[in-house]
Amino acid sequence: MLLRRCPYVHCFHRCLTTVTGSSPQVQQPLNFLQGKRCNPSDSVGEFDLKCPATDETLRKVLSSGQRDVNEAVGQAKETFRSWSKLSGFERGSVLKKAANIMRDRLEEIARTEVLDCGKPIWEARYDVQGCADTIDYYGGLAARISGEFLPLPNGSFNYTVREALGVVGGVGAWNYPLQMASWKSSPALACGNTFVFKPSPFTPLTAVMLGEIYKEAGLPDGCYNVIQGETKTGQMITTHPGVAKMSFTGSEVTGSKIMEACAKDIKHVTLELGGKSPCIIFEDCNLDNAVTGAMLANFLSQGQVCSNGTRVFVHRSLMGPFLAKLVERTKRMKIGDPFDEDTTVGATISKEQFDKVMHYIEIAKKEGASVLCGGERVTPDPSLGGYFVSPCILVNCEDHMTVSREEVFGSVMSVLTFDTEEEVIARANNSEYGLAGGIFTNNLQRAYRVASALESGSLYINNYNVTPAGVPFGGYKKSGLGRENGPDTLDYYTQIKSVYVEMGDLEAPF
Ligand code: NAD
Image (cartoon, rainbow, N blue to C red; front, top):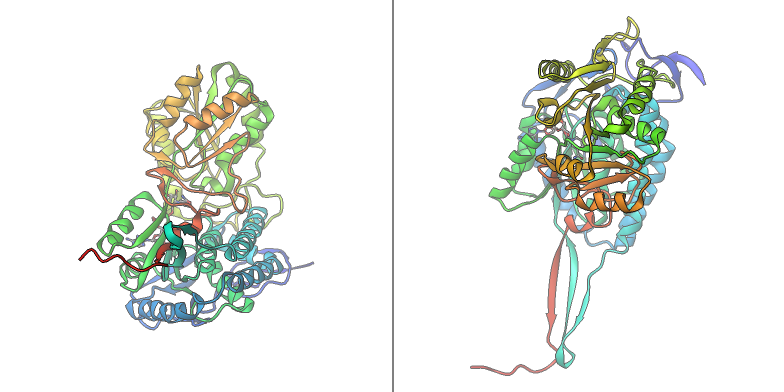
């Protein structure tokens, strides 16, 4: 391994780190149409692409306009005719090949993801591995997409076919950029749909790399397209008459707008939205695992994780030892250059997000919470001009406080005390969100009982924030609609055709 300047961009002087054969991603065209990178032909504005670690502007990116969206949807519609006619096995073979190419390019993609979204390199590697597994998983399932045979009287029968919807539009957030492109495109393509994706303007890079990987794996041109842009471009995709379904990941406010826009044309919609999930630490847990779990539930990706268990309910009898271990371990987390191997806290995505996080901490203090540790801006190195925040633990929190009710999307853990199982279930469910939740206990019956009672789409017993390929993920209540990453997701990318076959002569009633 050579110690040399990061090749992604000239001004990225901080990246004097070990680079293992990467290629320049930043300055290339960032739309992906007809199997090729290209620039927009009809832009409706431009935005800065910034490196969160340094806060330097890497380049300007043009927001694609209606002509670009029309072209992407038009090509996707055209290719749908042939792609949807292939067998599931044929489509799956392409996806499985893509998964292996992604594994081969893991280091390069992970480094691009770090540059784009500021998370520590080990997390980015883990994310890319997970994306490859998900693409592989849907590659394997594609051949199993089938219908049912229903025998009827007198030899007649009915059969059902799961058919693709057409062109699927995707819009993503910035915290797991490659994961959003992969979790949406791979089940969509496995089912025979074609796909047009708009990444978040904060993180445009890796969705295009996925396009190149699919192309190398043999995906026909026009099946997977990337259109860069901001709100307007997202609206153009959502309202395009050629789009049959929207798959969205982002905030509840935007999710609601997308659902409203889709309602006008009766389009299918999957929504992966925000959360304010509970993480419950019972008195009969393994304390070390519970502390690890609470940290996993709050501090991955600078706390910018939708499923985070930010309301940590701790049994009163365990509060002292739990907090002592938690604070000691949290203070040891290393805030620094996300490219450094031992960094555990990287950079917040933007100044706006940093301001939002700090604002929530201030409100929490005003409403009576106390900061046990963290919650401050840190400059780990003078060359790192990004927004780094030390992981924050708040105590003396109450359910009614703003920080206990609203999604912060930063490393801010609210610790709350409880006395009984019945009480904590009621309090955990007292949220308009229902994305995830954690239960730490060594009592099997209790774990099962509480998991049954919690109103959340994804629950973890004695772990948190693990998303192996094949495990469904998605929310109850205002956290969303539909599921990603699991076998049932195929249902959300297909529609059922039911065919009745009469084997006898008809009795004429008239
Ligand atoms: P956001 O809603 O502001 O933006 C998400 C995307 O929507 C961006 O690409 C944006 O350009 C686009 N957009 C904005 N307005 C639009 C419109 N009217 N029509 C079409 N597209 C539009 O969200 P964000 O700040 O990027 O992400 C943070 C949010 O995402 C948090 O609430 C977080 O919980 C949520 N999130 C959820 C999941 C999940 O799986 N449930 C995963 C990651 C993030």
